[in-house]
Length: 351
Ligand code: P6P
Image (cartoon, rainbow, N blue to C red; front, side, top):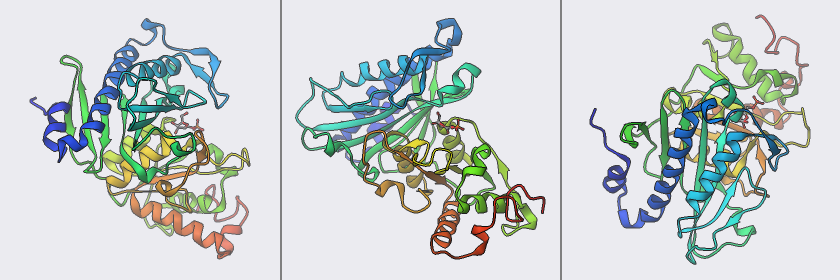
């Protein structure tokens, strides 16, 4: 099948190619890293890359061997590019400044391997990246830009096929890796998130810790055709946000990792800078919506590099409904939000 390879697509579709040259060059460096990770990952245990490393990341989580290896691969490739001023990685506590960089350029925020708990069970995982432009070398505080200032965002998903999905503001486009030529070939042009869906993704084992608006939303989905929504819903949860968001970009859906009271001081599970922001940029450019339930993700000014945030993202009509539930709840409206978890409004009910 003759497909447009990524480099030709960038030349044909960058509008003013020279203006986009900066981000295109960085995207191509990211692609080098993604290809190296993909080839290594395909070998699985034969390459001795499964299992835990004997280290923890900045979040105090035990790292998988491939977390560490993927991070090193991304840093190696990215620091080669003089347009890159600094890197912020999920796996590094502090920013990595590029000693060889120009005076102006870009910062890359990335999660080298998201969903790595799936690695040992051969599940889909991914790498996530976000690029912001700077007219001069940024201070630490200047690195904390809101997601609406991104100029390019994307991810790779290592599944039955290896795909690259990205947007630089003119549509969201998907490429599939041809392992013979090692070219990413255009396979999903101008991806759009259907505004409606019958599929939600949330880790329901946390249900007893959710805020009432989430309890209410999931309960009405589970009441199906006989309830307020007058339709049945399906549920998916892969344990890998990249795989869940990719499904949503392909066929619609809503992904929720809300704040829960399991750890009251923890604002959410997903990190703002290198997970929620890039995915929100993509989903908005594909016609979807992304919110904390109370605020647009891309408007949030980060407080720190590894800030966690509640994330409700996907089909617009569903995200709007959850925002509506939060508004009602915060307005003190509706006894329905104050009912105990296990009453008729509960998502455990049979009705
Ligand atoms: P849980 C992976 O670690 C991740 O950050 C996301 O990719 C994924 O959606 C989530 O955590 C899974 O969390 O609590 O279901 O294990």
